Each structure stands twice: as C-alpha cells, then as structure tokens.
Image 1 (cartoon, rainbow, N blue to C red):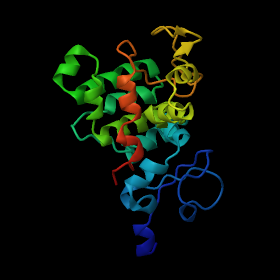
Image 2 (tube, rainbow, N blue to C red; image 1 turned 30 degrees about the vertical axis):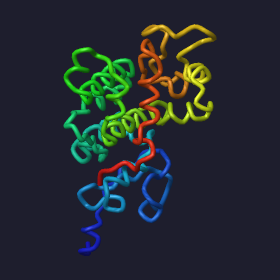
Image 3 (tube, rainbow, N blue to C red; image 1 turned 90 degrees about the vertical axis):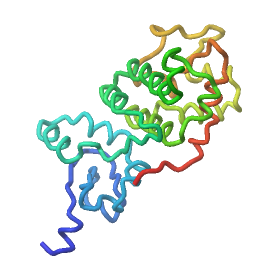
Length: 234
C-alpha cells in the first residue's frame, strides 16, 4: 500500500442506499460508502457530512440491521460524524438518542426542554418560552436541533420543514395548521393522543409549539436567521 493510499484509506460500510459520498469517492455499485473520519473523510470535512448526509442513511447507521454492523459502527463512527453544536453548552445527546429510537413523542418533550435550557433558568422553571427568548437563540443550537429531527425522520420533521410549509401557504396560519395536522376543520388537534407520533404523520407535524399564548413563539422560530445561514462545523 502506497503512502498516498494509507493517507486516503477509507472504511466502507455497504448499505443498499444511494451514494452519499461525492462521485469521485464513491465508485462502483449503488451502495453507501462511509469514509473513515480519521483518514480525511469525504472532502476531509465533517461539515460535508452535516450538509449532505442523507436522512435514510443516517438512520440506518443508528439502527443497523446486521450484527456485524452493530458491532462495527459504534467503534468506528461513535459520533456518526454529525456535530451536536451548541453555543451555550447544551447537551443534545438525549435528543439524538430518542430520535434514533423513533420515540418522537419523548423527543418532542425534550426538544422543548432543551429550548428552555437555551433560554435560561426562568424558562426551565416555567417550562415554556417567550418569543423574545426564541429570537435570541443561537443559530448553531437551532440548527443542531433541526438537523437531528431531519436526519431521524427521513426529512419529514423539523423547524425548517415547518418553515417551508408555512412559506408555501403565504404565511397563512390557518392553512398552515391544516397542512401539518394541528387542526382539522375548526378543531385543534388535542395533545397528546390526537397527534401522530410516527412517520405516518403529515409532513411538518412535529416538533410541536404551544399555541395557547398565540403564534408569536412559532413565528419567532420560523423567522429565525438559522434557516438562512449555512450550518457550521467541520
């Protein structure tokens, strides 16, 4: 093996999915090629994974079907190469774990908990948010939360998905509630039993935002500059 080959050594995990590495690094049959992070990875950057790793592939990494993959993946890719970035030292591992288990109801609860932690001790105590607190959330943290939801829902759930749907309605809240399944006709969906906590839910169905105090909190979320900024990390 030449020195160049050693420096560019890659570990391949073959999964029957579309290639997610750039074409130059993923020749051959249509299988997912996971490049060893310590050997430079794809383009030598964690940011490439953050921006391009497919939700289906990421979920497969967290829930491998074969015993060989279950043994290999945690040792070789312990963090799955997606950085859990936080500008306020929030630990998003519990959210990552619940989403990996597809426990969307518990993940929704901990999403609110983590956002209250972001807002500070007063919000943690009251267990809900002021829109002014949401406006001051760090971009990195909201992008971390959103990316985890995207990756573990095959791109179906997350704040950025909700924003896309909201914009598609012309920012019409009544149309938005109907599209994401928070209302049926004039009747609000009742928490928790009337919400759908799996991938059969409408696109953008979760995470939830409490509407008892109006739309200002979710409006602050959907208007946040996080959705017009490039994810960092890498």
